[in-house]
Length: 325
Ligand SMILES: NC(=O)c1ccc[n+]([C@@H]2O[C@H](COP(=O)([O-])OP(=O)(O)OC[C@H]3O[C@@H](n4cnc5c(N)ncnc54)[C@H](O)[C@@H]3O)[C@@H](O)[C@H]2O)c1
Image (cartoon, rainbow, N blue to C red; front, top):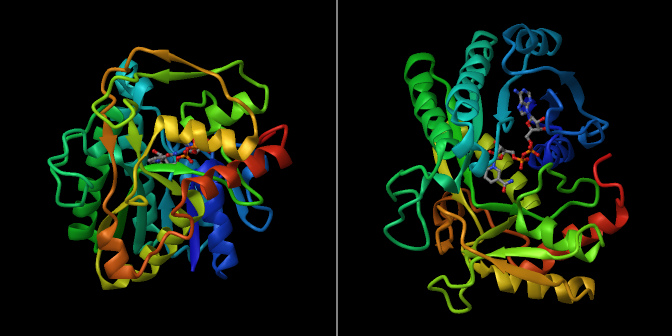
């Protein structure tokens, strides 16, 4: 297949592109480098520097790469906190950019589409782990923008016959040998903790140690970015059998303190931290049930252990001291 990967110069998109190419597919990366990095564009992928706000630049991508079969749409504003301060970036740009992309993709004959969605759809889970049957109650304008895009995809299926998959990632983490995580600002715990071990930060700030969990800190589900990428390929190949939504995580939660302890073991650094008050809107526990994708597509995480995930991230930072520059 020839696949257009929006956001392919970003963290998850670079690894999705790498997996596509390793599996014998062709990849066209579409990215405006707003958060992404040119060094994260796989050398064997074609690269179109374009912006999803700009419909002609999307047109150009499809014209330069005729016969594109599928789109994997990762490009997005991605920060929950920012979305609570600047909702328009999410409720307008994320939604409008997705529709711009859909409009052009369908016109160019694309029949398969995968959306990066999020655990932020589930701010009031009724049971843990969180399966696909749980109520969709977005926790922020960021989550709302993904929920709206999921619903828009259902209309594109009804009207244009587009087959789609929505993959709701829990916490993406880890690295491949080639690509790792460099967000600016960084908000994810594993790179933040490792940046202390690398000497780039004095200490780590732990938001809340009084949650109703065994050690008082939040529990999250970490899924290795390679395992996420593998799920994209499986989903893409299964779309002829019908559109689908999957929650993607390891199904096991680890507390913030467990992450710090694991990073101490992996790096040999004491990683000091200080405790700050809870952040509003941070639920105590978020763990995915990925039973559906396991049973329907046989997806199995190759990195179910936190230690292997943290180690892969650490190895990448040590090998790439300048990050994604
Ligand atoms: N990282 C996670 O743990 C996580 C969890 C759940 C969902 N997601 C979703 O996964 C996707 C990828 O996340 P990531 O962590 O790799 O983020 P990232 O910021 O590293 O990558 C996003 C990429 O999209 C590009 N982009 C943004 N706006 C664009 C536009 N208008 N036109 C063209 N390109 C644009 C950026 O330059 C960047 O390269 C996002 O949709 C995010 O919402 C991520």
